[in-house]
Image (cartoon, rainbow, N blue to C red; front, side, top):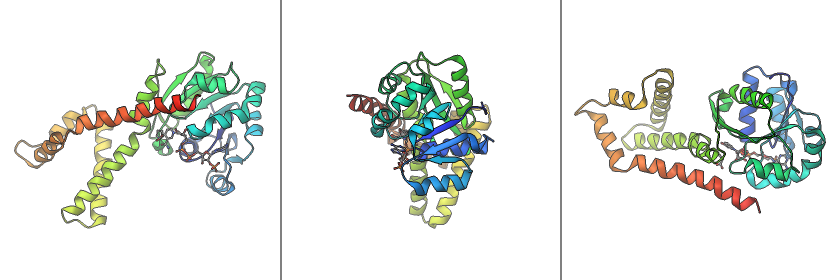
Length: 274
Ligand SMILES: NC(=O)C1=CN([C@@H]2O[C@H](COP(=O)(O)OP(=O)(O)OC[C@H]3O[C@@H](n4cnc5c(N)ncnc54)[C@H](OP(=O)(O)O)[C@@H]3O)[C@@H](O)[C@H]2O)C=CC1
Ligand SMILES: O=C(O)[C@@H]1CCC=N1
């Protein structure tokens, strides 16, 4: 995997997180190029990771094996129009991180007959704690699949889905998911303050509790439901809090939120593929 040259076109939050994860995992920085239009953030990335940077998407496509499309879905058509001729000339593996846009749309925007892997990563990739879903079109070879999988595994876990529509479900769960937990941290810190803690104490207790709970859930074979039961003494304090969450419809609210994110992916795909 470390022989492939990787170009991130549109290296903002998401691609920056993947690059950070790859560098932390030991990927050779000289084999990574990041592009975007503004010079200052590119210089920062170069200083931080010693990677190559460029504002020339076409020249960058020409000189790399794998092209990661990292712009917002709304900017993707313009980027594809710009690089299409070069993609047709050099036929790199294309990996998209964009929400919604299907592999078929991307392949068509790039002129057809292109190997496209659609992925849905998330920002904890920066800490090699990412979770990525992947789907490949029928032009992608087994070795290209293995390359994309090992690249994303370097930033966390990488799981293939066999039906493309499941990429929307992945988006609703893990793509958008870090924001749900950050929202819960914000709410919990605020609740801590409402019962008298200082902002700093509420913050520290909240964040350490989130970290501890996440580690317990991921580092043992015990299911989250059982871990929850072990905190919830009959007739005790937690029981009252859990009852309050249940009365407020937390589970249903989660389902609605995940579906809203997934539906927005579909909606974006339809809106943008005109
Ligand atoms: N943020 C997240 O948690 C996740 C995001 N995604 C997907 O990742 C993609 C990017 O999201 P995110 O990183 O948050 O967005 P950002 O806006 O942070 O990053 C996109 C970058 O693209 C650059 N850009 C825009 N047009 C061009 C162009 N023509 N050539 C080169 N660079 C360009 C912009 O920089 P400049 O203006 O300097 O050119 C910008 O920094 C989206 O498609 C999103 O769906 C997927 C999973 C999670
Ligand atoms: O909010 C978004 O559209 C992107 C995709 C998943 C996470 N962030």
